[in-house]
Image (cartoon, rainbow, N blue to C red; front, side, top):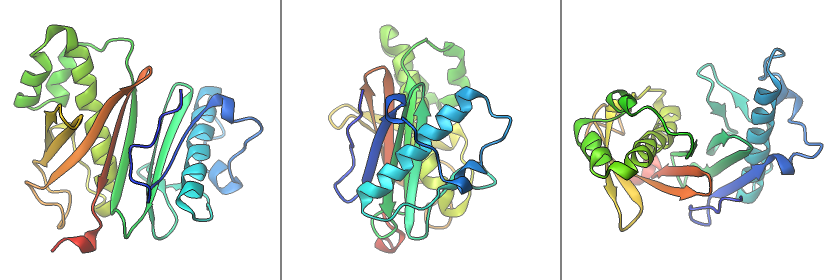
Length: 224
C-alpha cells in the first residue's frame, strides 16, 4: 500500500515498494555506500530507500543529489536539506525538507506482525510509558511497538543536528488520542538548542501492515 504524506505541503514525501524499482539503480556514489558483500535483501532495502529519497527530493522541488552515508550510518543529505529514510519489508518511505522549514525530520516503519516479546518494554519504556502500554491487554503489543517506532522517528530527527545519541529512555512519550500523536519530553539534552525538558510531537498511526511514525522539528532560527 502507498502511505500518504502526513506532513505539510512544503515537505517532500515519497512511499515506494519493490514494484516501483523496475530497472532503478542508485547513483554510483550511493552504490559505494553499499557493501559488496551485501545480501540481496539488503541491496533491495538500500535501493528502495534511495529511490524513496530521490522522489522525496523531487517532490520538494530540488534537483536530487546522491544521498550518501555518514560514519554513524545515517543518510547525508545535500546542503540546505534535512531528510529521513525508513524501510520495512517491501516498502520504503522518505521525507525531505529545507532547513528553513525544519531543522530535523524523522520517519519510521515497524511491522504489526509478528508480536514482540513484552519484556523488551524494560529497555524501551519509561515507567509511565510502561503503564500506558499495559493498560489494555489486547493492545499491549501494538502500544509497545508504537512507543518503539515513535522514539525511532523522533531520535532520527534529533541526531543529525548535533550528533548526540539518544537512548530509548532519554525521552518520555505521552499519547494524545485526539491528535493520534505522542507528545515527547527530552530527559537528556539533544544539544544546546534542545535541552532537557524540550517538548516535541511524533505522529503515529497504523498504515496497512505497518506502524508509521513521523516527526519534524522547527527550524533553529525560529527559537530563541
